[in-house]
Length: 344
Ligand code: GN1
Ligand code: MG
Image 1 (tube, rainbow, N blue to C red):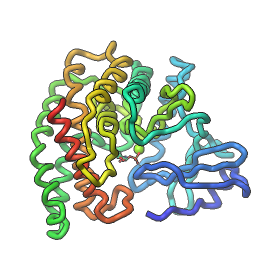
Image 2 (cartoon, rainbow, N blue to C red; image 1 turned 120 degrees about the vertical axis):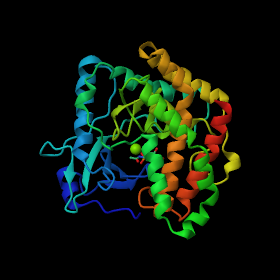
Image 3 (cartoon, rainbow, N blue to C red; image 1 turned 120 degrees about the horizontal axis):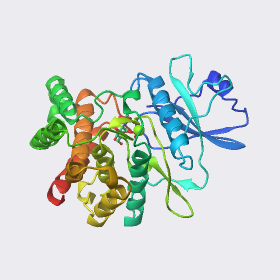
Image 4 (tube, helix red, strand yellow; image 1 turned 180 degrees about the vertical axis):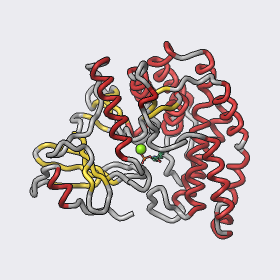
C-alpha cells in the first residue's frame, strides 16, 4: 500500500509545525506510522479502520488499563496516546480514518530478531509484567477490539472458507502450504479441548507480543515499555507466550524466504518461558502451566492460517510488498510450526 499524505486537519489538530520532519517508521502490517520531529519527537499513526472498525474501543480499553495501572502500579511505564487541542485522542480525517499521536520514549530501541537468551528473557518478562500488573482489573469492562482474534477454531474455518472461494490459480500456487496447513488440523481440536476444559483463566493480554512490540532500554538492555496496544483485551496467556515463541525462537523473521534458515533455538525458547513465568507463575494454575508448551504451536499455526487465507483471498488484509509475500510468510510459519512440533 502506498504511504498516505498526512491530512492538514490532523497536522492542525495536533499542532504539528510546518518545520517538522515526518518520516515513515515501523514494520507493522496494518497501520501507517510516522516519526514526527518537531523539537520534540512523536509517533503519529493512522489507524487502519478497515481492520479496526471500532477505534474508540481501542482508546477505551487503553484508558481503562492506564487508569488501573496509575492507581495500582504508579511506577509502571504504560504508553498512552496524547490528546489534540480539543482533548481528543483520535482525530478523524475527512476520509474517515482516525489518527493518533504517541510520545516517543527516548533512549529505547526495538529489535526485529532476538540475538541472545537475555534479550528473550527480557521481552517475555516485559509482556508477562503487563498482564501481571493488570491482574485484578475488571475484565468485563473491556471489549474485544477484534472479535475472535485468536480463536484458532474460527481461523481454521476462515482458511477453509477462503479455500472454497479461491481461484484454481492461487490454489495451485499454494498447493504444498494448503496440504501442510490441513495436516496440522488436530491442533484445532487440542485448542477447542483446552478452552472447553476451563483450564485457562481469562486475563487482559496484549495479543500482539511480537518481538518488535517491546522497547528495550538502550543502556541497560532491559525491557522498558510495551507498545502497540490495539489488541489489549481479554485473552489467555497462551496468546502472549505463544506469539513470543513464534517471533523469537527462530533467528529469522516471518518474512524470511529461505525456509532452511528457520530454526528452533532451545536456549531462546527456555529463556522465554523463564522470563514470562518469572512474572506470571504465582497466579497461574497447574492447568495453565501444563498448557505452556501448546502456546507457541498454537500461535504459529494461527499465523500460518491467517497468512495463507489472505493469500487465497487475494491479499486484502496484510500489507505486502510483492505478490507472493503472504504465501512466503505462510510457508515460513509452517516450517516453524514443524520445528516447534518436533521440539516442544
Ligand atoms: C499484525 O500490524 P502488526 O504487525 O502489529 C497482526 C498480528 C500478527 C502480525 C504478524 C491486528 O500485526 O496479529 O501477528 O501482523 N495484527 C492484526 O506480523 O491483525
Ligand atoms: Mg499490532
